[in-house]
Amino acid sequence: MWKGMKSVMVFDPKDSQVETDRKWREWMQHKSAVGDKYVPTAAETRKYLHELENRKQRHA
Image (cartoon, rainbow, N blue to C red; front, side, top):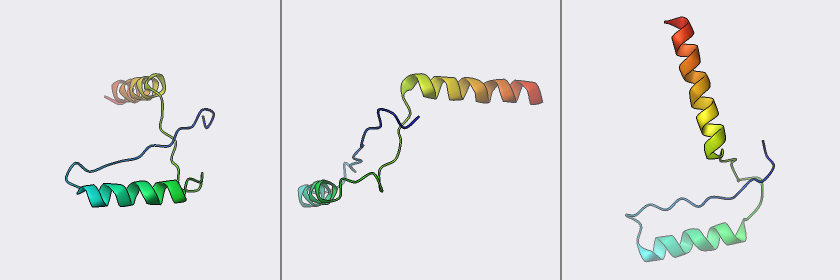
């Protein structure tokens, strides 16, 4: 699951340019796996949602 892990930056469109720049600087200074979160691929997400749907149908 962790193979091919990517880092993702999240920006708020309401942030000022100064705040966006600050977030970039902070991210660049702390690019470590400690704060990174795994983001599933589209295929993994589809599989997960399919499994959830199957569980709902079995318990209905």
